Length: 118
Image 1 (spheres, rainbow, N blue to C red):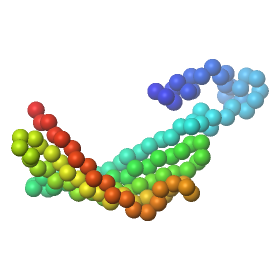
Image 2 (cartoon, rainbow, N blue to C red; image 1 turned 180 degrees about the vertical axis):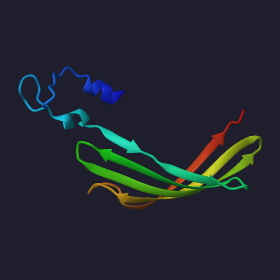
Image 3 (cartoon, rainbow, N blue to C red; image 1 turned 60 degrees about the vertical axis):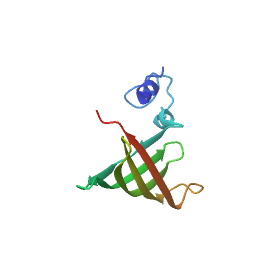
Image 4 (cartoon, rainbow, N blue to C red; image 1 turned 180 degrees about the horizontal axis):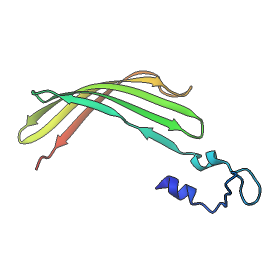
């Protein structure tokens, strides 16, 4: 929706890539200050309700032409606390790619999810 709104801005464009005023159209300006995030992942749940997963969090900064890529292997376990079902997951976060002043090295991720089955 955001890209459609940006592309629908009041610019007149010809097939040659020039605006009706004759100036070259800057497609990159459409994505100025825009970041795109991908979060692909996969997981496997065992018969004991333990989940093993691998997730990547990748962000592309269109303004700076830079990637930030974190790879996160994690393990989680379902359990009950009274009547409440929860999942506790722990993961290691490794920054495979980052801008010069961005994050680097390893990090730790801890997730606690409350589940409400119907």
